[in-house]
Length: 538
Image 1 (cartoon, one colour):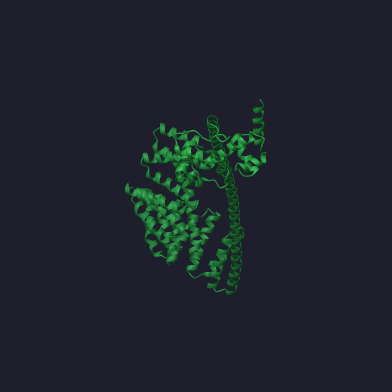
Image 2 (cartoon, rainbow, N blue to C red):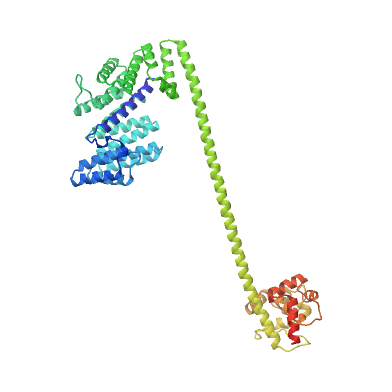
């Protein structure tokens, strides 16, 4: 219980100390509303300081701007300021600006990234033998470790920060390191290790701000020290010194009766009375410590207060009152857990809804991509088929032209047109043409490459290769062309009907015959017959 309240008080004092340093600085220009400060006016101020050759003044303007806009500084101003601090060897300003950046990472939950950046800067500072850089980065690492709950690392980093900052004039950072070390020592069970640094801290403050005497108002650094000293001596059991420092704090804060000061002093007295065994007094003070409005608005604070009240009531002992406190605390804790579970469930539902929406969008994109790619593939296949068909059609037409020319220049044999084609020098082609002049063989349904190769006494591959080289078509296409040529001869006379010509020429059914004829001649067999009849009539 002492430990938890102590942490709250020290945190409040730390925040007060920062506020004091910020608003009581020698530069009062930035004590007004931050909304009135814009980058343009900042540049004008910087230019004025630069023209006057006032390096310290420009540094002060920059550091106060960065303090006011520490959460979201202008990136250009930030980089310019870091370069300026480095160029003029203003290590304290340089490393304090970097420390603000790292703390912003912690605020955003990027603890690993912040830890890596701080460690990297500390190593660079060690390489440059910069005591300020090593000390301030160690102090930053201690803050990160405190957020992560690594108390032993906090002690080690605070000790390192004190060791290096003692060699510099960065008193504010040094005092923060002393306070942080004492704070960590009390939390980790090393309370006796806090005594020596506490006394060193006191001497360090006294060198800059003499110890206030009489009614003199103390510097904020003394308020922070005396509160830490009270907690430390209370914790180690030196109640005489603790009582002395509590009275000293009350004298210093006399006339400044704010709610924060009242809570701080009351908290110190509660710790003191509990350690002294005066549990009833501690319980009475604790009951009125936190305003009812805060207890009603903040269930966590109410739960913490109930637990402390229950522990004190147990020690008095007031068992019935303690039981009442514990009962209320248990009910409140159940309520908080239910709220937490509900919040977790709502968060999971939200995440699920977001994931579901993302999956739906992804499916839509994949479907669109699949549809587009399928259409493109079909289009490519269609274009390929068209190109291939046109190529085959050209080859077929060339072949039919060759057949026609061969027929017109060859002598009739047995009342039928000769079937000799071009390339008479090729004996295999001449033999093939002579062989296919046999209409029974040409129109045979079983005619194929294998039959022709066997009748010619050659290899199938050789036959296919020669036909391809001579006519640019396959064996099957060559046979089809010859059959169509024979069909043209039959169409030139009215002896056979159109339905009979297909089976007679070996071209299959009438439908197949019509399709092949149209493919090769771009007209139907009927149109071709009409054209032939008209030419004969003329």
